[in-house]
Image (tube, rainbow, N blue to C red; front, side, top):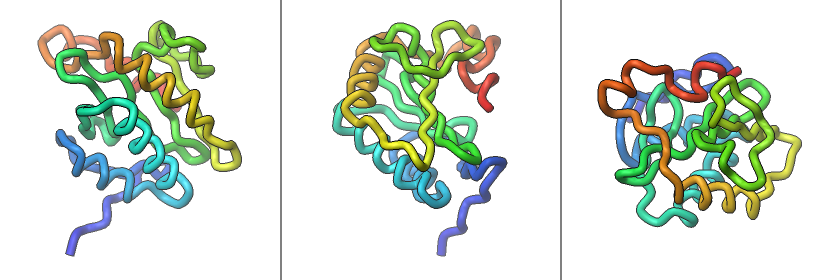
Amino acid sequence: MSETPKLLSGGNPQIAKAEGDGPVQAYVAAMPGWKSAVGRRVDALVGQTVPGVRKAVKWNSPFYGVDGQGWFLSFHCFTHSVKLTFFRGAALDPVPPGNSKQGEVRYLDIRESEALDEALLANWIAQAAAMPGWMTSGASARKRKTPGLADRG
């Protein structure tokens, strides 16, 4: 019998850092209430839009990337929303509405009462996956803050 993940502040599932679809699916399944449906839909849209997408859970958040290009999208549960982070969101057209302290990062907050514009989200996913993403390996990545994670909230 598997253990149910602990929910952290805002209902964010605590999932061990790991690569692959399995940890992302465990995270999505552990998202509380309506947020799990949002997580399933976002994950499905990414999979449909970016064949061969790379998945991982890092810092208790699912990450999506393209091999050799880095990470382009992540999301995180908060009390009243699921926050999508586009690491190079300032370059998307149209630019996602949520500003960040990090110049290139943009957010999309999805709330329970709001309809998800799947066509626009798929468009952003396709654009983001086609450009260089945020790299997490190497000494320079370890020395700088994770874009978008430091100013979440």
